[in-house]
Length: 90
Image (tube, rainbow, N blue to C red; front, side):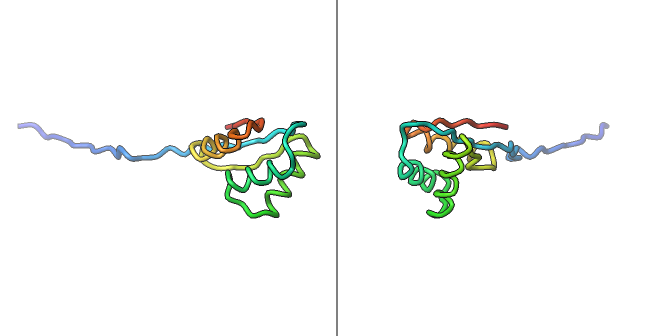
């Protein structure tokens, strides 16, 4: 007679990979276009979008999102809809 051990593993364990979305300044998008797209992508208010856009303009880039990699991909895809220069970093 043998003794059996049963080990059950959770199959729905989610791995959270932290990521950042960076938007780079360019010479062809207007402030209004960037503000609107930021509001759409990160669901922020007008003031936050204006501040991020100003940071992109004056510093050449800004981190506009920090969170889970999958969500960062969604944000980056929305920003890229108007051909913004976007990078995801881990």
